[in-house]
Amino acid sequence: MTRIGPWTILALAAACGAEGIPAPPAGFAHAVGTRECGPADGPAVAIYLAGEPVTALEPPAPYVRIFVWRPLNELPDREWTLAGQGAEGSAIYCRASDDCEVASSGSVRATDVAPDSTIAGSTDLTFPVAGRVSGGFRAVWLSRVVFCG
Image (tube, rainbow, N blue to C red; front, side, top):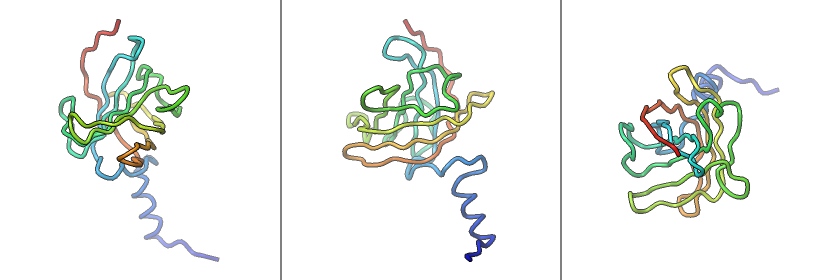
């Protein structure tokens, strides 16, 4: 029988974070969420993953923008498909402000939306050139006024 030592348990706990959220995707340790308008002018949410703290939209490249075509209160406890038939959102990877690509497959799961609108969750995305971006996030809410049709 294999024994699991205390260091192994601590390493696993650190990798998943205090609330069971996986480590952030490589190169994207910072995240914010904000209101957006969906394709039919309905409420939507954008989650930006970036390498540096995000203080305004658009963040400095490179960054990933995850877009879910639902209001914030509907995000938790569900996986949202972000590419292909039946997509409920989309994702882009921007290497520079004029060099972006759309995810070819992927999803996002919001495990929690806190009272201050911070979104905790994880994503697993694949981009044609950038490859796989997978990991957890804690997106601090960046409040802004958005008028949708």
